[in-house]
Length: 508
Image 1 (cartoon, rainbow, N blue to C red):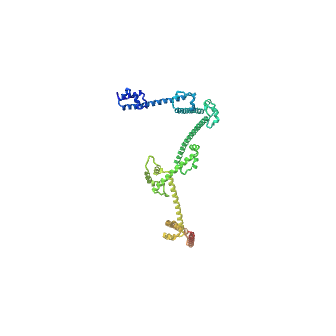
Image 2: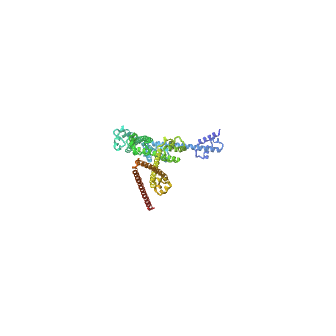
Image 3: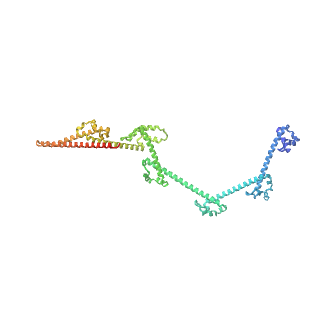
């Protein structure tokens, strides 16, 4: 016999002898010491170890059996309560002790020996019963709610009672509740009010969704029209019919014939102008950038606009600078606006309008400045020549040099106004005076030739006397003109002295 078989035989002896788990070793030994199986295990230690294992195992088995019986007793007790129709969620513990219910005399009541445990089981049962009743009522109410809402949503069930978003419950309550299917539900007044309000919320929600969808469609249409109108304005910009100088008050009347503009204006009266202003803002931004780039190019190329400059000469002058600036930017798949601008300056046919406008404006201003300065210079030269006429008006004055004349006229304001150009003006004046003297000499010879025709000896004294009188008359005229010039010179000198005197008296 193996050791395990010996242990099993000894444990069987203990079980058959009625050994209990709480017995001591000495008490159990008295029950089994005379049995033949006592000697199966030779040593006392083996017997005590087998006894300890047996008592532990037996105690576990007894506990399991006890818990099973207790569980069965509790289940039977709950069935006892559930089987009595008089036990409801309103029943109290004291009501159960009434013998008329027949609970306390039932064996299932007695199987639960602990009164506290019975109270706990009863409380648990009543709580479950109340919860079940509440759940049943909730489900029933929810079913009534679905039925009532389905009734309201179906106009065919109440054709004579239209329910709209503006309907009030007190107006249609009686008609709605008069329907047979609704009467059978026996609905509470508060529930009817709550569910009717819920249906109104659904109608309002549906109406809001409908309006939102309409707004989305309207906005989508507005976006389409706005994109079309913007494309139209960009075409106007490309055709140069729309520039940075354009204003909405000047342009809107011309768009009345555009169907896109008219439809967009009906949907949103202010959007066409907003789009126009946006295009103008971007146009101004692009123009500002182009002017900034152009200013950089002009400064880098050191170009100065003159009155005789042309656009072709300007582009030729900045060609190398523009090519270098274009190479400074990193190349990409799509050229940047700056690169496109520099590329357009390399050919006169592709020059941006902003550059042409800038050049024309700068050239016009420079030409105006040159013409103004030239006009002022001519006036100064004319004043200087008038001043020279007071000094040099005879043929013997032609030999006067500039150094001699400068000494005589350097105190005059007309001389100081010309400054460095006085010498050139003097030489021009002397050339004019020389031509004038030559012309005057020729005219005198022609007059003398016409006044001395061939005559007889008798007539010669008369002609001589006539020529002498004419010469004397001319000399008188010359003397009078010379006196007039002197008087004008004195008056001018007096005026200048008065002006100087006035200047000296003026406060510092």
